[in-house]
Length: 328
Image (cartoon, rainbow, N blue to C red):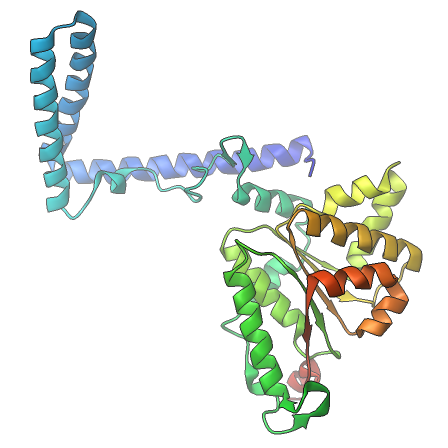
């Protein structure tokens, strides 16, 4: 995704502040420790001093002094480790504690963009997404099976109860998160209104956000509104669509089938997005109230063929929980 100059500056300022804060807190920890243990501070200074003398001895090729300095340095390092250990610390405890240890709050691991930066880029592009608010309250800890009937056998679900169906879906969602670093399949969540599809999407999204992955949440209407703006603003609409929606580690399209847009545009754009994300090994969740036949009629056979071939189908059953909550 191509950021504007202002967006790039915002991200860079954030990283600069993270690095400054990490180093400042490390300095404060170091000063507090050395105040309690002056011997540790003296040893640290002596080691630095001897390291400089070692370089000079190597340049002068003074083998006798070189051997003496090496032995002395090793003795100081050993005593320093013992001093730290006596205080229940290691030298690493006094180093900066970065928000992201992978990139040390630079945004880059070598020449590769860090996952934490990809997440910040997504936030810059889609700061209006409702995901960031929902994930805080709709998560695996707050998901309740109590709303689902554990008695009535459902013919459409091979005699399982609504609760049994949701127990299976919940396990599958947690497994999806646990294995996301290795495998990023798509999931189609289908079922009637209010049965928990969006809630479970938010559970997955929140867990992956906490793990440092970039997550983009869009309602179907919002997705196709953005696609239309890309189509009219760019000569190459497919390239624009790919650039906007293919990079997030996880894309969530909520309530597919409720949008008001051209069927042709929706079918073409959806196929382009899904195909590109599959190629790039990016995860995609789609929630819909429509069954597969209705989806095929609306979005074309190639789209549904892609979904059936690459996505796990997760069916939902139960009452309208939203309505039940209002009545309660």
